[in-house]
Length: 105
Image: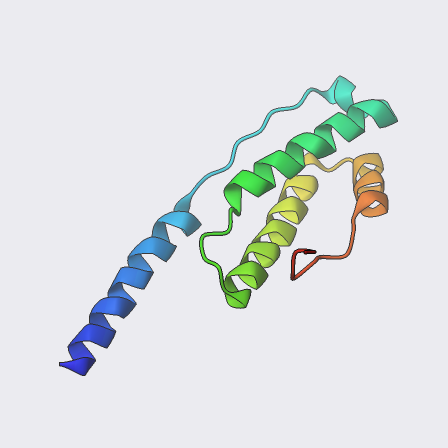
């Protein structure tokens, strides 16, 4: 009986994880937005919102927070890589704050 419950719980957990990993993110930008620091700042804000929606934390444990932060880093890196603008990357690196594991109270 206990084994069946554990197996059922594991299968339910997988059913929630799989759709989240299969999600797609979309964002658009225009090349002229990359020509100025202000434009790049707007693009970086858009990337932040996209990453936030894509990697939204589902659980409340420390492991969930760590996974959400990992997702955010990897997704932001992937987006910046696809855009391929050195100035945008430099501005993003200058703006990055160290990840916080716990919210301030």
